[in-house]
Image 1 (cartoon, one colour):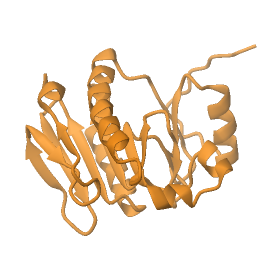
Image 2 (cartoon, rainbow, N blue to C red):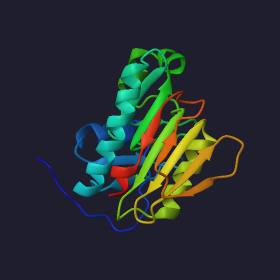
Image 3 (cartoon, rainbow, N blue to C red):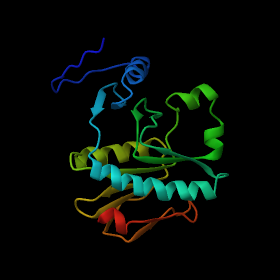
Length: 193
């Protein structure tokens, strides 16, 4: 028997093991866990955000398929246990081959204990920009090398890089993967539509 409940804005803390059990029982929910153990329940994105995220994932998949020796790509259903203890699920991610292969099979099947080298977050209408910016900073603090926060509402991209200030670009036509994802170019024309 399943029971649905609505929780008020009270932080609910869970251990990593409790989080894994809740996630296993509620596969249709998008769950995350903060470094403090607070459970975050993210509603599914609207169809419009899903459509644009699909365009981003398709381009990343194409690049990954051409360069399988470099690493592995992931969609928003993949959870990663960051070094700070948070369990996060970026909209798109990629990890270098050697880092991925260093994990055990059990680690790969669970919430992989690593921060992706590359992360994309696509802001949906219901997302709080400051919360997404904090999330991007958390990725950066935990080992991400390159991250893009794509905000369709303002048609702006924030680029996060190790050791550099966040760069903001107004309505770019394309983004490059720089040295992290060599030769990868994300074309944004259809994402802005």
